[in-house]
Length: 196
Image (cartoon, rainbow, N blue to C red; front, side, top):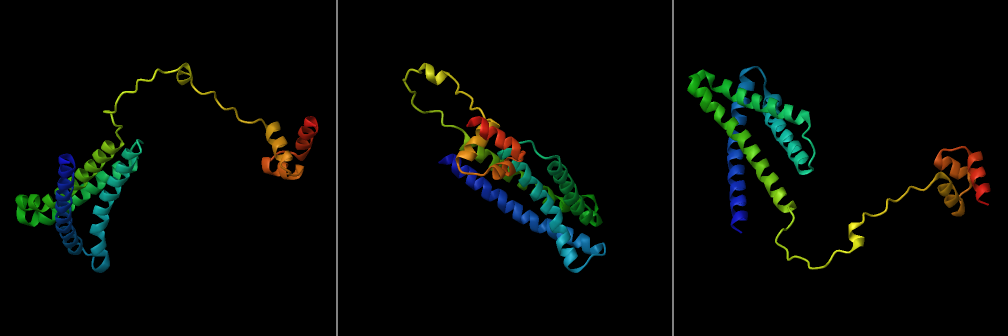
């Protein structure tokens, strides 16, 4: 119960910081885009593309982690470029106020990226906790038999002759069987005649 409370309150705090940081970071990037010649819808959308790339890359990395697959190189590259772009845009926005102004201006972008990654880490941990098998189950006192130690017999795929005969017995014509199996009709006829 306490573990769940900790995870929930941490997730809420991380999301609150992410929302606040996203709003401030967006405003800084928007003002920078406007100051460099863009206006209207373009000026409003460009900052969203920067943070959107970070979010999308984080989600792809999370999905790969949950599926136990390697993280795509494009996701890593996109995350790195997005982080550099958002922190860079916020730094440049504050440069007019000196080095301290640049650092203060960059902080929301750092907080936003950190929040994204903390949230992803929480989700990864939650997934591993749910997926982990229960260990504290009572032990079974059954004696294993020889049958449980023997691996199952491999199932062999049916041969072409068996498939042709089965389809013929099911009422398919020689032409239909040949077309379905992509083989010559004379071969189908020969297999059927050998079976008879």
